[in-house]
Length: 151
Image 1 (cartoon, one colour):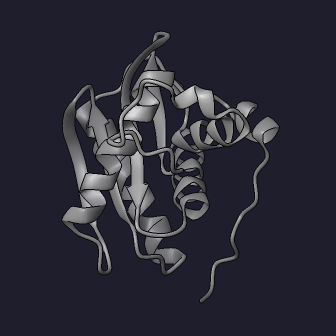
Image 2 (spheres, one colour):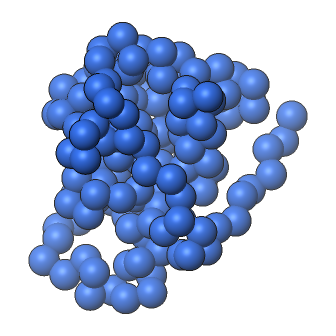
């Protein structure tokens, strides 16, 4: 099964709902990660999935041919999320529109889609991330997993 590449605009990404929760536990991280893995399997994708609470890894699955290189990329995507407080794909779109957005940030910051912030009571408390496909598929998969999780 071939999954179509999604398209996004800066405006669409800026209007995406914020993943806000009253609380978010390790059990929530496992359920969210499992929902993301179910989507990866359903869509026959090659993705690594990670859920972090703070800086701690709460869930990881490496499907298909993914492995440590994908985990390393996720580190860089998470840096973008933590710095800006929004998805790494929105970070890429903003950087593409205005390269000065990345001024002062090193090459360890990966302005590629695939990491979304998780908030509790208005504070950034974690991330849901993926790596292995194109950055728009990475983003779409975890955004859809969040939608299912919140339903």
